[in-house]
Length: 483
Image 1 (spheres, one colour):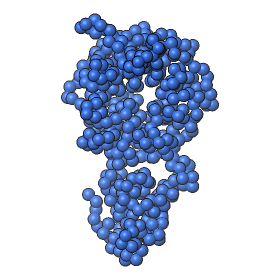
Image 2 (cartoon, rainbow, N blue to C red):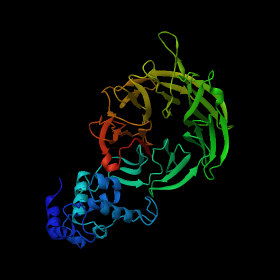
Image 3 (cartoon, rainbow, N blue to C red):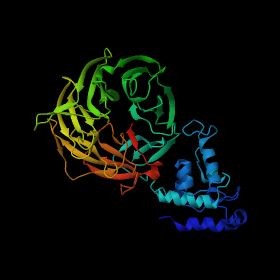
Image 4 (tube, rainbow, N blue to C red):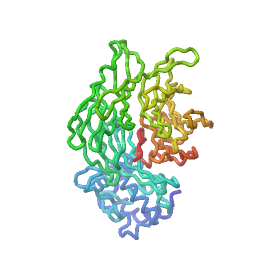
């Protein structure tokens, strides 16, 4: 609870100045109003002071106004100070508030502003003698989260929590977020590739890719990447240093009878690059998907794997429709998992396992309910976390866990759904050790009762851990990626 004594002390000390400087119809304070003079005279505890400074430094301008209810003129001064001379977050001239005196010196920041900053810090759980307000015992992870409006934040979770907002490069989320070599890579539909330094919490540089409507990226070498193009029907190889095109692989031959194709997600296993290809018939209806297998030593298509399986009951061939989610590699059994969303109501998706050595379909599993979604393996490849999507009456998503036998057979772990939420395609992520799963909860219609944010699951025990709420992140995340 918010401690009352310090707040009352502040109000008592400055009631006279507030009456003198603020009209009854104006929520702003006077331009030179102060909250307490010297740092030891603010009337707040050390923990409350830390909470006030965290709100001033970490909460977005929109939330300072809309949620903390600080006046617009005070927020303008706070934002100008913390962004530095260039007015951009995540750059070298950023100037965070180190002391209450520095915050007190901002025009229009006085008693009312301090009171509201303190109240909001308490609401976020930041007014605690323990500095870490979101704890995941035994973990120490860095994540990048994005929302539907393109806002970005680098998050640290574990024994303590920290957040650093980045300037949104676009008014929409990236197509995909990848991590490689200690950096985050964000791919946008307008052909921009952003490289984010999580240590400095800033955009390191932007590369203008020679690729129309990129869908995904994968590494070719340490200095080059493969990028799939939705509209060019090709995979383009790009130099990361110069942004120049190094070559391309044409996928137009994968069309069926006058239909169209759309290259989507990429996954590299050894010297082979697996390329998801969604197909449509000439009528526009979804057709069976495929995997184009590229030999990366020659950058040529080695084989096309048709994503269709035989129904064990009828013997008929069943097409796998709409490959749209990131693929997963079971390194223990050396199998590639391809998740197909399917098309309701006749085809609700499936998981197909591919042998990356023989390039043959190994086996499959139909979706248990709704659309098949994203998958992620828990260490040591003994659990598979799966998202299923439903669309009645609105789209919701549910996270389940399957146990993986030594031969790769999947069986439900039981216990029902771990997390219920709304999400985007990249809402599921797992850390490099395979021990921590996170799922973005956007709660577009208030579906998830525990609130928007990031849900965490201990992959070893399948225990649901404390949720990181949207107020702490600064927005409702729809995409998330571990470093």
